[in-house]
Image (cartoon, rainbow, N blue to C red):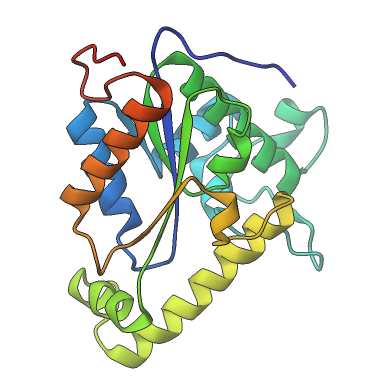
Length: 224
């Protein structure tokens, strides 16, 4: 595996999150505050582009552990897989995961960024200036957030979706890494979003980056 080192004083922030906890909101707040790139669904588009595939292939397997009943995703979108894969008519889950991981490593090597989900903390475990976060919240708070943003319109549906997606994310993470999803030992900082607003969490992360790496994420050239 190619090791790509970040340029200058660039850094990476990865965010694991429970569904409905506000991890994506924190990621966007960090990216805005520090003036750096933000990657979430954008990773799927970039990974698909590099692999020469339709984005749907990556969306269908996004943060889902492989299904051992099928094991592969068939080409069914009017594409010509024989041309791209020398006669093969399928692409494995591992190939999709590896392509996305390569994209994450390359993006983190070219500039500071925030990457949400997709085992980014594990993929960037060798990055010399990476900060790994996990965002959680009490279930009732997650349900309120899910309903407020319109993902579900009643509490029962929101709670069902919360459990389903958290299980998918956990299975995906635990399958592809040697760690446990949500285990505090896997991350540098863990936040309960019900206790600290995203704006305040940004300042905590900034101070952590200053003290750990001796750089100012706000771009003011701070040095200890």
